[in-house]
Image 1: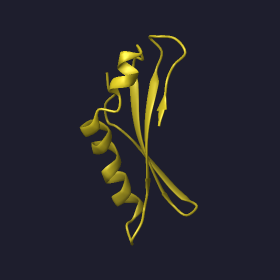
Image 2 (image 1 turned 180 degrees about the horizontal axis):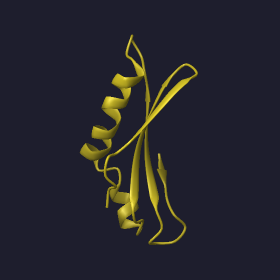
Image 3 (image 1 turned 90 degrees about the vertical axis):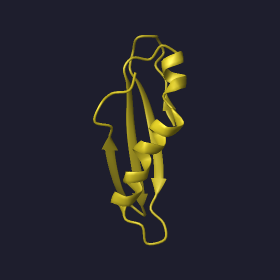
Length: 76
């Protein structure tokens, strides 16, 4: 999911949603999220729209349990 700013120069957000399945823990699902964003360069559309900075968040769900991890650095 991309959250685009209304104006260039404002922050944008990339959210990678993962569901923990097949005995996978929330931590394992989170471990997949941020590398997926970087590998697929999901932030490119936000950078092209002038978003700055671009924040990356992985969100993992397991039923009603939710965990969130942010990228150490900011993209773009």
